[in-house]
Image (cartoon, rainbow, N blue to C red; front, side, top):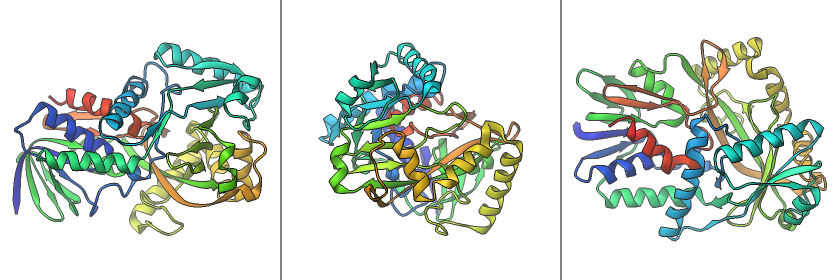
Length: 399
């Protein structure tokens, strides 16, 4: 069976949903179809999101992340207010841990000025007025606009709104081939003819792009994020979020502590190299062919050591073991003990784009456009926060 549409969106995660919303705003009569390989929305990154609406202070002013994050956060808060979705401005403190962190604090404050972000430079005592159990070294930053929201409630609301607006969803529809001349894609369930296609396939966006001859310089490497929770008796240790100063030797942020919308406190995530794009458990989500390909790329990255990959691997793999995980958490709150951390079933995958030629991690959003399609290749954090602004940017570049 073949179906025709004006706009075809691959992927029903937060980016695919917000792109559909943006298209519907601009094209009220057009036929829009969203195809999703799973049987429902929210089974992967968008439904496993931390729920933090970031301020954007970690990103340099010349990045797409910086341009999209603060605007996206405001739009998401407005969306939550319009549709009665719980959203709380809990604020976030970013704490230095050593003398070497102090220049980075100054760099983050420069980011806040460059990107017009509300942030305050505080001393130790001022930070403890906000987060009494935090253990900063000399200085820290307070971001009062950081908020928390339930990401699953957001994507379900978007889904229902889009259904009401006539957007069609086709589940169990993994893309397996495309015909550029006929402007059609074939899935395991059907064939779709389109006027324009948006590849918002998240962890599989690189594979979809390669069907179109795009994304040839990139591959996706998954990193597993595991979390612990604070035992309920310790949930009052945290008022909002406590984040570290980024380690300039490593590409990822590191363990942080967040009180989420229901009052639970999560500690994490890790960024452990994984062998599957959906490898949430030890063996869960492993596929032989995919695992061999990812393993080969990981070996190359380890040998080349770009982005200090060896140190990253050693540091993160150690966090599989609770004592090492605890040490990372204690850099933020030294009073935490082994028994304060209890197991959590919260696990996510960061689908990280890697440049095959340079063997380096791509740290910003990347889009590739062809005549009748656009491919969102690196929709990593803070993509959820940015989504309502980022989708506008995506559609602008396709019209």
